[in-house]
Amino acid sequence: DAKTTQPNSMESNEEEPVHLPCNHSTISGTDYIHWYRQLPSQGPEYVIHGLTSNVNNRMASLAIAEDRKSSTLILHRATLRDAAVYYCILRAPGSARQLTFGSGTQLTVLP
Amino acid sequence: EPEVTQTPSHQVTQMGQEVILRCVPISNHLYFYWYRQILGQKVEFLVSFYNNEISEKSEIFDDQFSVERPDGSNFTLKIRSTKLEDSAMYFCASSGYRGTYNEQFFGPGTRLTVL
Image (cartoon, rainbow over all chains, first blue to last red; front, side):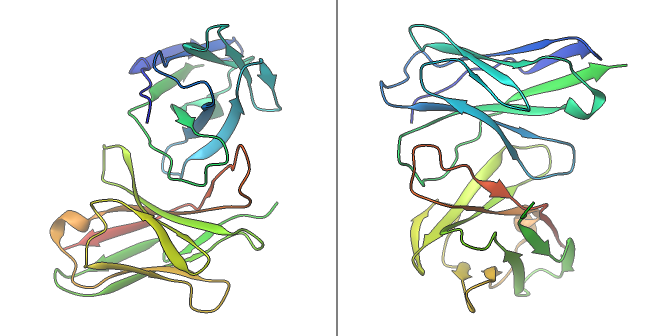
C-alpha cells in the first residue's frame, strides 16, 4: 500500500478553520484518499474521501492537489468536539480490504 | 442512525483464559472486521470476514484467535488463551458494499485487560 505522511500534531483555536495536510507522493492513479478520525476513547469514524476533485460533506472538505501527491482535510470551523486523531488513508477502488492506520495527526482545539 | 455495537465494554480476564468479544454489525452490511489498539499505539488490523469466511488476516491473527458469525447478526472474536500482550481496545467494524468507497463503521470498542 502507498504510504501517507502527516504531521504528528496540530493546534487550532475554536471557531477557526483547520487545514490538516497529508502527503502521499507514491499514490497510484486509482487510489482513493480517505480520512478517518478517532475521538478520545472512541472507535475510528469516517470523515470524507475523494479521488481527484475536491469534496465537501457535512463534516469537512477535502482538497486534493492536481498531481494527487498531497491532500488537505479542511474543518471550516473547529469545535472542541473536533479534537481527535485524524488519519489519512489510501484505498484501492472497489476495496473491502483492511484500513491501514498510520500515526495520524493529533488535533488539539483551544477554547 | 444505525450503529455497530460491542459487548462488553470492558473485559478483565486472567492470563490463559478464553475470552469472547461480541459485536453486532449494522444490519445489511456484508463485510466485518476486527481491529485492535494497544494503549498509545496505532490501530492495527486483525481480520476481515465476508460470506462466512475469513477474507484477510494479519500476522497478529494467529491460531489463538478465531472469528465467527454464529447467527446472522452477531460477529464474535475469540481469543483461546489470553496473554498479557493481548491487553488492548478491540474494535469491530462493518461495511456495506463492494464499491469504490466502502466506508467502514466502527463500534465503540471493548477494552480487554489481561492480568
